[in-house]
Image (cartoon, rainbow, N blue to C red):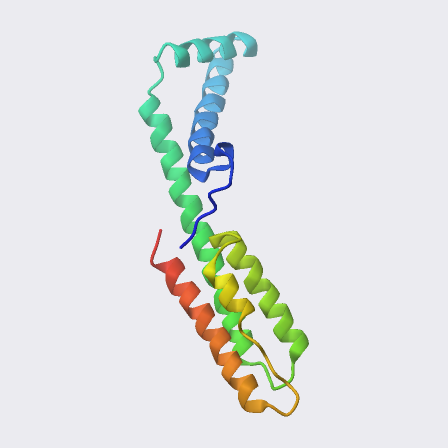
Amino acid sequence: MKKDTGSPWWKNPLFVSISSGLLIWFIISIIESYSKGIGILTAFKKIIISFLTSEVPIWLVLIMGLIIWIIRKYIFKKRIIIKIDGIIKKAEKLKFGEEDKLDSLRKRTRMLIKRKFGEDSSYLKELKDTFFYTTEEREWWDRDIRKFINLLKTIKEDIESFL
């Protein structure tokens, strides 16, 4: 499974999740301070100072970020699997010569592969190498549809095997 290695560090899901945890803690702290009658600017200064002087339980922020990251990975994984299952069901129902519907399924599959595995994925190459014939070549059509469905099932299995 090839990951997107060209993304900048601020787009890293773990960094975003930890930052989200920090932001949640920050917002809760401001609300808490404001409810005690402290002005927002004063609360903001106190929170920054407490964070910089390590009075903040940083482990809590990291754990919150890690939990957010795990939840995002799980939800993303489930959504992709549901989409792949939908594509498989539609591909199994394709009738000979329905090229428009097939083209739509291949484009959706291409999009999912790029999103999950990156531009350089071997799955993209395999998808591109699967040809579909329509005019009077029913057995080629059936064979290539089976190859397409098998590719989708392999992708699904690959996604399910990792968190």
